[in-house]
Structures are given as structure tokens and as C-alpha cells.
Image 1 (cartoon, rainbow, N blue to C red):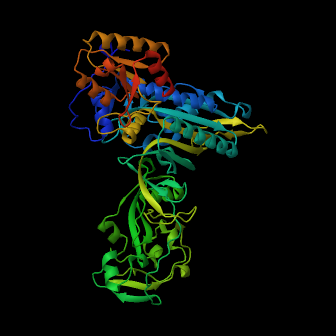
Image 2: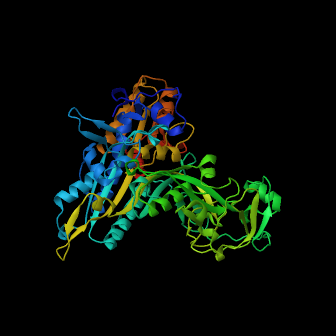
Image 3: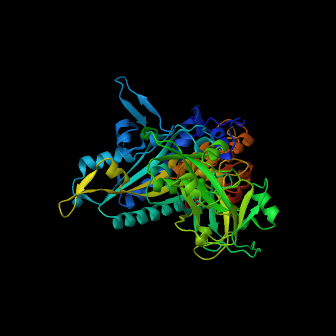
Length: 581
């Protein structure tokens, strides 16, 4: 391809709204063009990178036994109503009416559409297992689109869905996809981690995320310094904490603590570590609108120096009651109306006072003693509380894992990393098949719901992820597999006949070897051309300039701008580039 005949509208100015370097370089390098909030056109360079990433994904999906299909971008709302997600998904689901007043949605995900296909065409266990995939457009009406392709409203994803007759077979396919994803991101030469994750609005029992490590990542990952354990912070687990702080010694004694409400005040008042303080986080539970249920209060107890992980709390409630929509902070008035004193809430008689069905204790508090907690009486706390003497306490994982906590796998120390989610695999089970009555005949002639899995990769997001991890202060740095062109041939002075003829000859020789090459034949200054090479980030560059007089050409490896000088022999240059593709 000749630069003079191609369409690469590079610009010098950094877009005002572009915060991340990936967003800046994709716009400046002529890869994308914004036409609306969170909506982008992919220009020729951007389309080339998209196609390369998509091809790798397609090859690995085909190799893993998946069958490619294409589902409609527009989905009848009726399918979403059947699954129960039409109201629960939230405002990110774009709903609209057609001219006949029929309800439709723009698909942010395709569980309903694929389940409809299965229930219409798969009738017997003999047709199972089967896995389908597509690479298609999606739309999520983000309240605040930002960071370019990282969090847009319109985006391109690879979706895969599998159907099984048993959970054992789902486990097999889950591991099959796990390995396929690892091959995809390895081929893209990315530094990534596979992490335990929360299933979110998709639902299901098992979930793993694939995170590209990058300082700008929106997700916090908890990783062990000693082993391969990694988890999204929303799902991370830790060993039970052990400390050598002095514990408060008393036997369930009631102390006057006038106006001492916060953890910090209590810690100072009793001169003890907040580790021994029983902190309660009070939330208001909001239910699905169609259920017409009044909000209820939920109480989550954690150690005073821990934080409640709200996703964990919401998941616990959703397990107890499938009608739970969200959690919001309880107001002072909510707490007072429940017969409680803010700042003095404790577990003693809490269920009798509030009649709440939602009282939970963090797993780290199991059988703990020597604790301080509120006495459910204004200006009083109990000291020396032994939770093992309480009956019917419900222990669950609630606390946010912190740096320095101990790994459950090997006993190593855990730390935080930042990551960009580029893939996510789920064990859906029968959530959608039961709701949508998607059934098959088993070996005994009985109707059974499909056991399902779901596997996604953010194709368009990967452009940003690669650049966030690889690019430098000069511009884009692509991996070998993702660069729009393998080689840029840069004619330093296109008015110089010798340089131009050598460049043309090299260009033709590279094309004959099927090496993707961009010939910069423009009548521009060399400095302008080299800046564009740095910005665009093709994998390698060949500079044909003044060194040609000494029978030399300069080879530049874009990653690190490392330079090598070769003899100005066409076959030698072609062979070098073939061997260093």
C-alpha cells in the first residue's frame, strides 16, 4: 500500500477530551473518528487492526470447536422479558419502539437471542454439546462514556455460548475456553492475568476474567506475589487474618461511651486496634419495581479496619432473594425508624429489634472473641464480645481484600495491580434456559433445561489495551500480530531519484513475499514522515536516506526504536524482514 494513495489522516494536536494515551494515539494516528458520545468510526488503519485481532480470535474459536454465526444487533424486548432481565439490567439497556409500537432493545449481550435459537432447533441430547460464536456489534448506553474505545457505548465483541446436557460437560467446555483465551492473548503478546471474578448482570455460578495489566486499568486486581493466584477485587479471597495486637479484655461488659460513634473514636477511647472493633455497614435493599416490595434494611458486620465489598454484599443478598435489584446507603432516618441508634449498632438482639432477615457477618469474624461492638443503646458499647456464644449467625465473605493480606492458595502476600478487562467466561447453568423454557429431551425421554456457558472477548477494546500496555511517548506500539502493517518503507527524500527507485524496488520485493508493507512515498520532509511512523506504530521501518550513498539502509524496530544497519541489497533486506516478522 502506498501512503500517498491510502487514507491515514494523522493529526498533531491531542484531542481535548482524550485522557488515556491509547485514546490520544488512536485519534491522532488516524485509526478512529468519533461521531457521537462513545461512538466511533474505524478508519482504514483501525479496521486493519480490528481484522487482525478478529482473525486470531476466529482461528482459536474454530480450533476450540466453536461454530460461527451472526445474530441480529436489534433484539425483540420480549426475549429479555422472558429471561427477567428487561427491568433488572438497568438504564444501560437501550429500549425503543418501532413504527408498530413493538418493543426492541439494542443488544449489549446475546444470552436471550442464542437461547431462543437453541430452544427452536436443538431438541435432543444427541445434538449436544454445541458451542456457537459471533464477532458482532454491541451497544451499552453508558451513563458516562470515556477513554475512547475503552468504555464506549458502541463496541465490537466476540460472544460464544455453549449448550450442554450436564454440568460436568459445562466444566469441560469452560476449561476449553479458558485455554483458548490464553492462546489468544499469548498470540497478541500481552502481559495478562486470569482472575476470579464476579458474574455481574450476566449471572451464573463460575466466572473468570482475563485482565491485561496496565497502569490505567479501571479494575483493581489482587495478585499473589508468590503464586499464580489472581482475582478481581470484587471476588478476591484471603486467609483468616492473624495479628499480634493486644486484645481488649472484659467479659461482655457494658461501657458508657458518650458521643463515641466512629471506629476511629472507639479505637482511641479504648486504646486498642480497630481490628477488634465490630463495624456494621447498614444498607437499604431495593427490590425489582414489578414486585412492589418495600425497601428493607440489611446489616453487614466486618472488622473495624476492613471495608465492605459492596459487590460481595449484593451477591449475598441476591442469593437469599432473587428479587433484589440494588443496595443504597441507609439514611440516618432509616436507621432511627428501625429503632436503632446510629453509631451504637451491634448484633445483640438486632434481629428482635429490626425483624431484619438480612444480617450477615464477614467470614473473618467466625468464632471471634474479645470484640467491641455497639450495645443498640445510645452512648453504650459492649466490650469482650464472643461471637461463638451467639446462635444462628450467618457468616459470608464480605470484606474487601487489602494489600498485605495472605493468599488462600500458598500463604504468600497479596498486592494490587491495575488491569483492563478484555475477556470474561461464565458458567451460566440453567438460568436462561429455565426462564425461557429452552428444553431438550434427555436419554430417558424427559424434558430438561439446557446447561449453558458464556464466553466474551472485547475485540475493539483490545486496541486500547494493547496500546496502554505497549505504546510509548512517541505514539503507538503494536504487537507483531496486531500492527496494521508489518513494515513501513520510508523514502527520506522522494525527490531523490536514487532513493525513490530503491524504495520502489524494495516495496515490490516485499509485496511479492506477501509481507504487508506501507510505502511512504509522499513529497514530505523526512522529519514529518518519521514522526508519522512513530505515531502510527507499524512493526518495523526501513529508512532509505543518505546512508544509501554508503550502500546502507536503516532498519527500525518500532518497539524501543532500536536501529540496525543493513547493506542496501534488496534480497538481504527482504530476508532480514522475513526472519524478523
